[in-house]
Length: 388
Image (cartoon, rainbow, N blue to C red; front, top):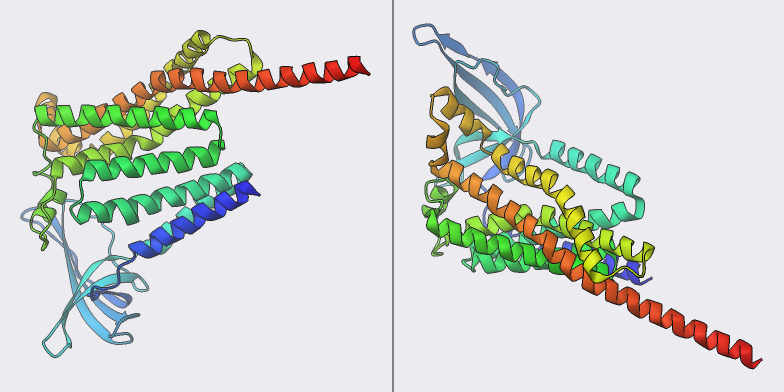
C-alpha cells in the first residue's frame, strides 16, 4: 500500500510540473497546415554543379484563427551537391509561420518545418511499452521515474535558468531531487538506496567542481555557439551566465550514468553482505571498488561517445577541409564537447569510491542491526523454551 501511494504521489507531482510549465500567455504565430498540393521546380546549375530545390505548396490550415483557409507558400532549399533531400509531399502536415497585416489578415506565410511530433509520440510509446512489458513492476517504476525526470528538467530547470536563476545551483538542486526520487523509487526505501543517493550526489559535486575549474582555465564561455548567440539577441532583461549554463548541461548530461554507477555499486555491496554476513567493511569497500573497475570502461565510453556524437557532423566538415586534429581540439565547439565528456566521466569515476565507502558502512551497519535483533529474538525464544 505504501509503495502504491508513493507511485501515485510521484505521478501527481509529475503532472503538476507539466501543468505548471505550460505557458499559454503568449499569442501563437505558428500553426499546423496540411499540404494539399505541391509542385517541384528543382534544378541543377550545370555551371556550378549545385543543386537547388524550389517547391510551391498549397496549404490548408488545420488549426488557429485561419482554420480551413487555403494559402500558397514557396520553399527554397540550397542543397549544394546533395540531391537526395526530403521534399514536402501532398498529405504532409507542416508548421507554418503566419505574418499578419495591421488588419489581422494574412500577409504571407513561411513553412517552418515538417510536423514530426506524431512519430516521436509513437516511438516514445513503443519505448515505454517495452519497458513495461519486460520490466513489469520495475518497468512501471522506471517509467514513472522517467516522466518525473523529464518533467523536472523541462518544466522546472529550464524555466528557472530562463528567468535568470543561478544555473549551477538550479541544476544541482534538480539533480539531487531526480536522484532521490529515482533511486528510492527503483531501489526502495533502505540504506542501499540511501548509499546510492549519497554516492551520486558526491559524484555530481566532483563533476561540477572540475567543470568550473577547467572552464575557467580554458576560458570556455560558449559565446561562440549558435544557441548562446540566440540568447544574446533575445528580447529579455535577463543576464545569462553562459558558463554556468554549460556546467548545468554537464550535470544533467551525466546524472543518468552517475546514478547507474551508484546503484550498481550499492546493490553489489548489499548482495555481498546478504551472502556473507560476517564480511568486514574493509572487504566490502574493496569489493565495491572491484565492481567499479568493471563499470568504468563501458560507462566512460557511454558518456564520451554520447557527447562527441553531437559534434560528429562538425568533425567531418573539418576533416574534409583538412583541419588537423590538434587544431580541432582548440576550436570552441570541440573544446566544449571534450570538456563535457571528460568532466562527466570524472564525476562518474569519483562516484565509485564514494559509493563503495558509504555503502560499506551504511549497508553493513543495517545488516548488523538486523542480525543483532535476530540473535536477541532467538535468545528470547530459547529462554522461553527452557523455562517451559
